[in-house]
Image 1 (tube, rainbow, N blue to C red):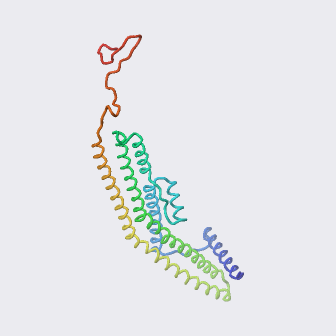
Image 2 (image 1 turned 120 degrees about the horizontal axis):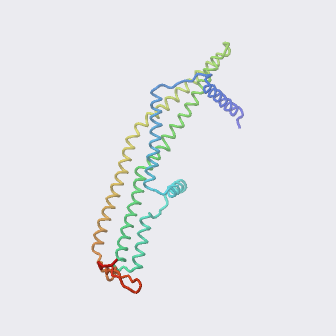
Image 3 (image 1 turned 135 degrees about the vertical axis):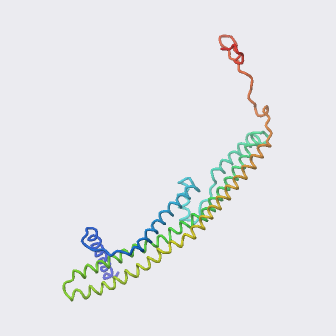
Length: 282
C-alpha cells in the first residue's frame, strides 16, 4: 500500500471539501463556465429527464404489470434475457378453449368458446411480438443511451467539478501567499490545475455537444416502435374480423341451447292465478 499516495489523496479530498464549504458560505470565489457550456449542460440534463420518462412510459404500456417489469429487469441483469411468459390474453384463450371442449365443441356455445379462445390466443401472441419488437426497437436502445452516453457525461461532469474545485483552491492559496517563496509553488500548482481544468472542460463539452447528434438515432428508434404498433393493431384487426365471420357461421339452435321461455309468467295469490298479460290484472 502506497501510504504517500493515500495521504496525497486524503489531502486533495480535504482541500476540495474546504473549498466547497467556503464557496457555499460565500468566502471563496468560484470559477464559472461559459454560457455556451451551461446551455449544453442544461440541454443534456433535459434530454436525460425526458428520455427516462419516455422509456418508463413505453415500458409501462408494453408491460403494464409492475411485477413483471421488475422480473424482466432481474432476468436481463442475471441471464441477459426476458422470461418467456404467456400473456393474459393467451391465458384467457386457453381457458376458453378448455371450457368450450368441456361444454362440447359440437354445441353452439362450446364451438363459439373454442373459436373465441383461439382468437384470444392469437391476439396474445401478437401482443408478445409487440412487446419484443418495440422493446428491441425503442426501449432497449434508448435505455442503452441512458446507461452509456448519459452516464459518461454525468461522470465527466463530476470530474470537471473536481478539477474546478482544485483550480479555485489553487487560486485561493495564491491570493493568500504573502512571500515570493510561497507564491512560486502556488503559481506552479495553479498552472497545472488550470491546464487540467481546461482539458476536462473541453472533453465534457464535446460529450455534451454529442447529445444533439443522438436525436437522429432516437427518431429512428421511435419509428421502429410506431411500426411495431402498426403491425400489432393490424394483426388484431384481422383476427377480430375473422372471428366475427366465424361466429356468424355458428348455428344457433334455441332449443338445443336451452332457450328461455317467452311465455308470460303466471303468479298465484291466495289460490287465485293472475295472468300478468291480462289488462285486468292489478
